[in-house]
Length: 282
Image (cartoon, rainbow, N blue to C red; front, side):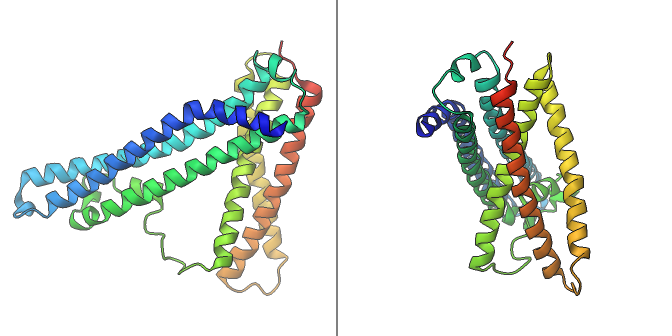
């Protein structure tokens, strides 16, 4: 039954997210084209004294920044779409049909989590690769024009992590595997916390359930941030002899991942409790 549920959840998400990511590919192409155009204009003979070259490079830089911001919006749209599929399918009028299916709440929830993680992983690859391509196309442009003086080029750097590559040297296989696991856990945690918040909002609020879910999500995020910070600090303080940055980062990383796994389990149980005992579609 889980396979059938996953099939229909993916089908529902595909109708929205495939066009969104096709648009993202178009944005990536436009951004890369802008970077190459700006570089070409900056390398034209007499470009340093040409007002046309200045206009072209300035417009290209603006398009680059807008492309990166558009990709950030694609990532946000993916998360919102996945979350709405969960809420709309279970806690709106559609839930009257969904909850009559011969499927356990754990299967319903598992399908939503798997479908959400699949699309969030696809989104991560598309957005990250797109930003890297845009930044690489912008490298010649950023080196030939002081964009910071006229165009907020730092927005692109902040959005894409430009300049971070190579900061810690070439990662090994273990580091790559650890990063993959951490990324997967972080995505699952973010998704399950949102599911738990909106489940509680739907169960506890008689009106404005979506607003209640948003409020609970903010509250849970804030509370988890405080808890994670406190646990990390206590973990580091409890580690005698900690003397270098790498050891500190390793300990905080392990503690953070472990705490997120525990939080994933707690959010899963909250969602199941709501689905089994507190669903109110009135």
